[in-house]
Structures are given as C-alpha cells and as structure tokens.
Image (cartoon, rainbow, N blue to C red):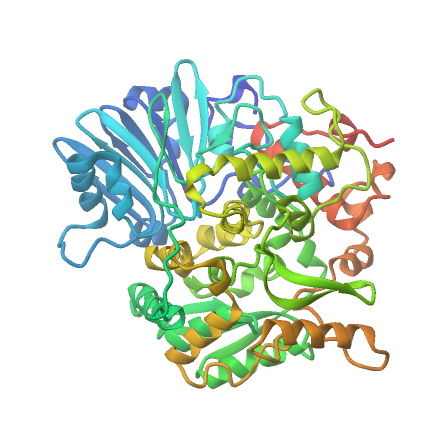
Length: 591
C-alpha cells in the first residue's frame, strides 16, 4: 500500500485481486481477523496513522496508544485490558498470572512493570504479546518463544507496531522490497535477522522489549544446563507438562485438537479434559491416520479425517497473509479443510518437538551404503551451516533469484552468512554450539504460520510456550533433550500412552527407528514407513498449479514446486501489504 492510502480504512482501498485476476473477497484483503495495532504516542497520533473506526476498542495512555480489532472470542478469551490512573496494559494472547494474585492478567502485569520495569517480563508465562505503560514509560514484549510476532515500522518521528504485518506495512512510505530477505525466503523458506520482505518493516527481535526509540535485549532465554547423578530429567519434564496442561484445561468450551500419530498429539489427548474431537490430515488407509484414530479412540475422543485434495496447496490471500512475509505457507497443513474445524477452541502440539526433542540439533552418524546412518549421541563439534542446510527447505540449485543490489554473492554464501551471523549473535546466551543451534531452530521455526492461522480463527493454546517447559529446555543438557526422555516423561503421565506407536517410530530408541526406516526404504518388497504429510509435488502437478498460479510466466514453471509456492507466497503477500500487484519478472531473475 502506497503512502497515499496509508491512512485509509480497508473498505477505501482497491480490492486485492487474486493471482488469477479475479476480485478477492473482503476477508482476503490481507488483514488477519484479529489485530493489535499501536503507536508510541497519544490517541491523536494513532488517529493520524489509522482511523479509529477500524478498531473495536482503543486503549490510550501517555506514551502508547493501542487499537484492538477482533472477534468476540478473541476479546473474551485472548485479550485482556487494564486502564488505571498511572498506566495501562494490553495482554494479547494467553497469559497466566501467579496463583498468589487475585488481579487480572493485564492489571497484574501493569503492577509488576510499575515495580520492577522490564524485569517484570521475566515473570510472565504463556503465549502472548504484552504492551504496558506506567508513568510515561512504555514497553512491548513477546513470550519466551516469540510465538506472537510483533512487526515494527518507524515513520515521521514515531514508531508503530502490531501483530498483523499488513496493518503496520500501511505506514511504510514508498515501500521497497528487501532483496536479501526475499532471497532468504525463496531459497531457505524463512527470513533471518528480523527481516521481512519490506525494507522498512521489521520484527521485534527474539527475547527483547520494544521501546519508544530503542529495543532492550532481555535475559529470559539463556541456556544454563544443570546435571548430576540425581537428576531425573524425564520425571521433571512429566511434572512440568502436567502443570502446563492443567493451566490451559477445563474451561468447559467445546474443543478440538489437530492431531497426528506423534508424541505431542497423544500428550494432549491423554491430558486435556475438554477435547471432544481430533482431526488428522491424510488418506483413510495411511498408517499415520490409522494410528491417530486408534490413539483418539483410546482416550475417548471422536476422530475426523481431513481429506487431502488440491486445496492442500491453497495459495490465496486468506492463507498467505499468515506467512507474515517471513515464512512459507506450506506448513498450514489443514488449509484446505478449515471449514471442517468447527470447535471454537483448538489445541495442537506445535513447538513441543522443537523444545523437547531438539529436532534441530545434529545426532552422530557414519556414512555407509550411500547414506548417513545414526550411531547414537550428538555431534561434539557440529557445523551449523551443513546441518541447517538439511533441516531447512534449502534450495541452492541456481543463482540468487532476487536480482536486487542487496546481495551479490551466491546462494551458498548467503546461507552460510545468515546462519553464522545468527549463531554468533547469541553471545553469552548459549554455553555451547549445540545449544546455539537449538536456539536458532526455535527462533526460525518454519511452521509458525500454522499456529498463527489457528490462533486467528480459534481460541488457541500453545502448551510449548509455558515458562516451565521453556525453562526445562534451557536447563536440560542437549544430550538429554531427546525422544527417549520425552517418551519416559509421557509414560510417567500415562502408562498406556504409547500403546499405539507412531508408524515411523516403532521403537523407543532413535537409532533403531532410523535403522528400521533405512532398511524399509532400501529393501525391495518391504513397505516404507511413509511420511505423515501428503506429497506436495504430486498434488501440485495433479492440480495444474502452474497454470493457476503463473499462467503468464512460463519461465517460472521449471522450478521445483516448493520454490514456486514460495514465489507465489512472496507475490501475494507483497500485494496484500503494499496494494501493488507484481509479476514474477519484476522481482526475480528468471533467465
């Protein structure tokens, strides 16, 4: 959206058009359903930025003014406001005050901020973005995992921020594309360095507090491993998981769960009392669906299949907006079945594997039979660049596609610099390279659009963001943050929780699972363990996506489907954010 429309309401802007050229519906304007938008300054400054008629409520202080827009369920369950004589506070998301206080979440945060300043953020627990002011000083902070992104733009001497990047992007004058971020997005599937696809739109850094003119680094996410002969990490984890679930359970509202056959899904089904139905994406005969159904039945929960159709790759604005211009939409796996998710409250296990099983930390392997075979334990001196090349959706089979002036090296060099710079930026937060690699995985987490979409359409809980769970991750040595420890913790919670094992993990041992998977994939006549996710390449071709997404750009058709989907994500999101349609040739070197 150009500066000329920066102060207009959504209804005044030319309707966004889909990639096929047909007018999009009002819900496809690029804005999310729910939004927190604010400015450092008074109500007059907010009104100069965006009409207050866009918001359901305005919370005005001396140093910060915030507009809130959203559904009734958002305002009732996931938005808490306090306005007092000396300050104000908005909690956007899920936050749990200590049991020792009778104050509401927002009032309690305001009281603690008045007493100890930004140290108050050390005491918060949940998945949230907090905006608080006391005595003319204001600060904005995310949760420990930055699961609720905050986008920031500076304009005309003041700073604006918000949870919906499109709403903040409206304030960017003469918006220009960040070519470095665009190359990262298209080649790696994520953006590094708090970038977005627009040069003057940035994200609040990980574990930091945003102020009127500066950003303060917090010290909540710091690795301090504890170990000893008496340490039982599984028992400790089990107790923390039970408390984390109990904090989120039991309000009586109908609830569903997006569940696979994995460990995190069965934790929810075994411990959350108000889940009525679980949903699994796949085909009726898929092993993943079969086991997910068995686990649901075991715990007395109805099970519904989300069928795989060509809508699995829906790439319209109402999906792409959840990428934020920083992550690909591919991970919104349920996208083609959103109408089937009817419960107002929804659970999922996102982030638990990342936090508890350290899926971004490399295991020791040996090379044999043309493959890398696991031998147990963790690499003592891993190369973060080599490892993340396999963990992210890296594509480096061409020169940088974004043809701007921001980067003149190769894709490999860009990837190496991006990963290395991120690892080095952690400084004293990490006591080892392994923990630095774990932190990078948490900071990047490609699947966050999945969580963002769920939270924008349901009352959503993120168990992995619980402060006790994150503290377990930070205080447990990396060699003990693994599937074996997680499984022992699950058995302490429920002896029968692993009765129906995940089809790709028939054994408790990671090494045995990897060996059996290797054997099944390589021996003729033996059924492979398969994958829980549909074959995107097959769906892309069968649905004729090239003609649907790029009918006038045949030169794009030669790229792999995942890269083409990223290109479309970038084009659609930029149009939502700026109001200007672009074709692939305007952004990429396609020769």
